[in-house]
Length: 393
Image 1: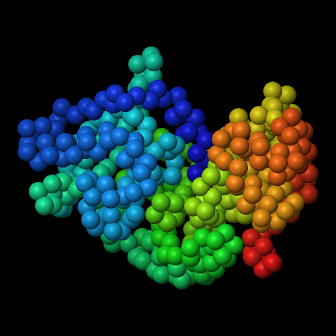
Image 2: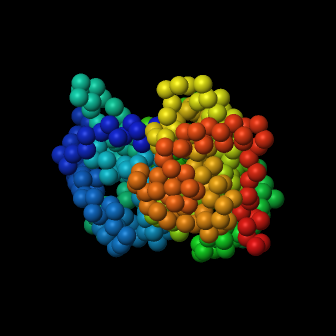
Image 3: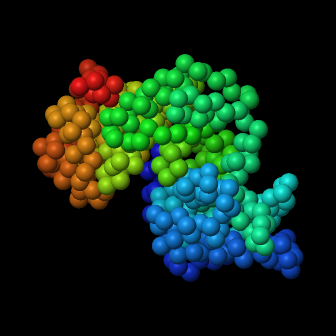
């Protein structure tokens, strides 16, 4: 999975405002009747109130999105909730500048940059996006550029999973069958519908985001060009840059997220890292890195563990700490204990209460206990309790 912490922390610095600024590049002919219609639709869409963006009812998408796009995806805007920005792109209240409006076959592509300015007036780009539109029934309606960019990709159905991949990719059927089996086990264990799962494979993380419509997104261009995310709204896995992408277990485990919408993010990330590893390394590898990083740092206070969200491009402590907490819950009370850990809520207070109630760890003891566990698991390994074994009981 991607490392959301850096992006989230950066975006926390924003001073969100309802006074969004929309600018138009001087090269765009604003007198052109087609451009005028497109710009009008674009401005209305990106400044529409957050109530619309957060709604669970999707009928309102008919005003903006083509029927074809709505029929394919329950939440058709794949760029807004792309798995790496929190809050979502359109909920941030960012300024926007339209860079160009171009024609691509039967589509108009509106390219724009979302940005904000610091208090010193410095310019901070967050994303450059490409949104396609078509003129239909006298109006302009959005489509997903992912569908346009992958129209000539191959598709392969394996059980309930529909894989999408380019002709350059050598598909591994054995790993795909392994994924479908794991998908069935997880859905059975957590009461998730065993329904169709779309699964897109990309050659790299940058290629993933380029294909879904980003020329640039904050967080792109790092040394570790691997990432993935699960689109919970549309039941889609995106994975880029991995050696065995058909079985991206880390992202597959996120399919349980829809059943635990009240769970703290650290626990959901933790169980994914615990069972699925992180960046193709098992959790022990990352435990060793985190322990070596923190063990002699006297400034670290893990009693405030939620403050320690990032180490580098290759290890995210969220998966380590969250994974260990999930392991302790499973060790103590099995699958029901894990589910209870997920039930306390999403706030900081809920997180510490869950640890206290389910794991008997008071906040003042977290630093000592966690360092001891990191040392133990670094030397002895983490005795993972597999979901495959849990499903048998």
